[in-house]
Image (cartoon, rainbow, N blue to C red; front, side, top):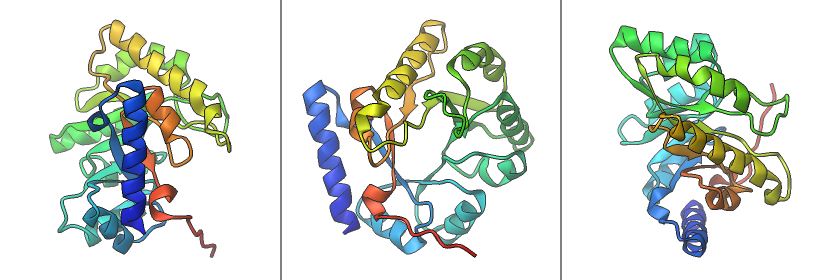
Length: 230
C-alpha cells in the first residue's frame, strides 16, 4: 500500500510538472512520519524514499536510533524549543521550522560548539493565523540580515503551512506569498534562498504550481494517523 501511494504521488508530481513546464527532479518528497512507526518508515524507504521528517524531538531520536543502519535523510519540521536544540541540530539534514531570531541563535551557538554547520529554512506564517508559528513576512524582511550574520547556520530557503481547508485552492495565496517573498529576498542579495518547503497531502499539487521545491507529505503516503491519549 505504501509503495503504491508513493508511486501515485510521484505520478501526480510528474503530471503537474509537465503542465507547467517544471522539472519534477527539482522537487523533493519528504515523508512526514509523525506517529508512524519505524517499520512503516522502512517500508517507504524500500519503496525508494530517502527523506523523512519528524515533528517531535523525542520521537525523532528514537526512530533515528532504530533506523541507524539506513542512509536516511532526516528533516525536522515541528516547532523547535530551545531545550530540544541539542537533540536536533547536527542530527538532521534540514531544520524547516526556524521561526524566530532566538531559535536561530540557539541553533547557531550549539553548532559553533560542535564545529558544524546546520542547514535551515525560515518558517513564515503566510496566513496570519494565530495558531501557527513563524515570522510574519514583514518581520522576516527586517530580521533576515541579523539571522544571516549567524555563523553556524546555513539558510537555504523558506517554509510555510497552508490554510487547513478542504479546498486546496485556499492555500494558493499563502504559497504564492512565500514564493514572492523568497524572490524579493534573492533580489536583495540573499541568493542562497533557493528552497520553498510548502505543500502537504491535501494541497501539494497547488504548492508545486506556485514553486514548491520540498513537499511534506504524511497521510497520503502512510494513511490516516491514529492519535492515542494517555
